[in-house]
Image (cartoon, rainbow, N blue to C red):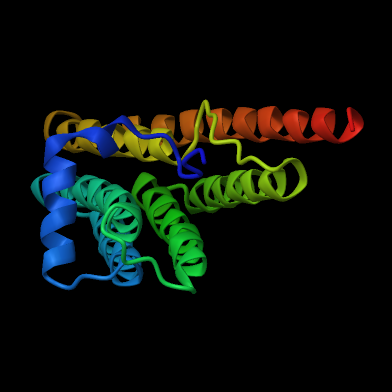
Length: 211
């Protein structure tokens, strides 16, 4: 049976296998790891919020912390599935905890980045677009029997773009008085996420019409 999870090359790396094995041996549960991802996202959102209006050095530090929390959130997203499947610790309510924390994390980090950029409305708009891509992925799974994980701005791509944007914005805070990088990153994520929504919608509609 094909693996229904998001295809990730990092899942096949030695470091991921070791981390998953250690977590399993220490009694970690997939649901607990999924819940932890929301904690990292909340910390990232707080860091982004605190960066707004902070002095250059402090702003850079908060932005770097926000970037790190984006990656910690992704690490949890990788390891919860590995502990569940490879570690044999899947729970009956696992599908809920696999999905719900992801939506919360998307909203926290993207809305937080909007505040850091001085454009809270843009952050909330990108968050809404991100949630829509997940809805369409699961609608496709329900209607066509397979989830569509394609981008150009699926979750890993969004987090990579936000991480890079936050790191570059930290550098910008130290060398310039402008605040251009993070707004630009959010606009790029918005455009790519919109394209992802159109692509996934087209797949669903074509699949329905070809029945």
